[in-house]
Amino acid sequence: DIVMTQGVLPNPVPSGESASITCRSSKSLVYKDGKTYLNWFLQRPGQSPQLLTYWMSTRASGVSDRFSGSGSGTYFTLKISRVRAEDAGVYYCQQVREYPRTFGSGTKLEIK
Amino acid sequence: EVQLVESGGVLVQPGRSMKLSCAASGFTFSSFPMAWVRQAPTKGLEWVATISTSGGSTYYRDSVKGRFTISRDNAKSTLYLQMDSLRSEDTATYYCTTGWEFAYWGQGTLVTVSS
Image (cartoon, rainbow over all chains, first blue to last red; front, top):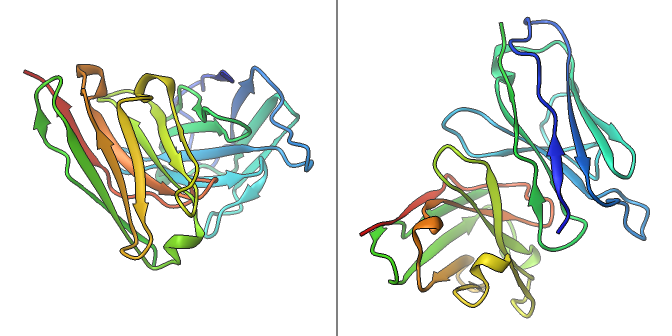
């Protein structure tokens, strides 16, 4: 199984600052079509997860351009610019390169 | 507007069975693979199973293989999860979600396995 390892944030992050969340996979997530099959989600307290980006860097419909995904085949970053109170929650990376699909353990973002 | 509404979650004893449903609307259900993801209390997300658009292909995590069955009724725009031989470690909120990118999620239904 592909293991997804997420970093920890130095919480809380002051409102208006930037935050970068890291995620590493135990195997390359680049498929033969050239796309990188990495999703990012945000789960706000008491809510269902929300897709932020797919194919590593493509923002989902309706997602603010303050969220940007980047990375290589095994190392990924989700950058949140000008953080706001509504960005607080747990962020998960997920690989959809192969089965079983696997998630990282989550990174908590708190806003000051 | 895409809507996914899960139902069927209850308190059940270990070893018993239950079936979850997910009613979909606001999109062409038959055009999207579907999946179940669960989240144990205070824990992270865990993929459970995925089914192809026609239902001809299914995929499971090892810990549920042989016990859970994912299925769909495209005429009714409904996704199912039949769960047999339930264990305490299956206790979780179960979400249904769309596509390979897990773009849309329901509100979840809580399954509690306890004696």
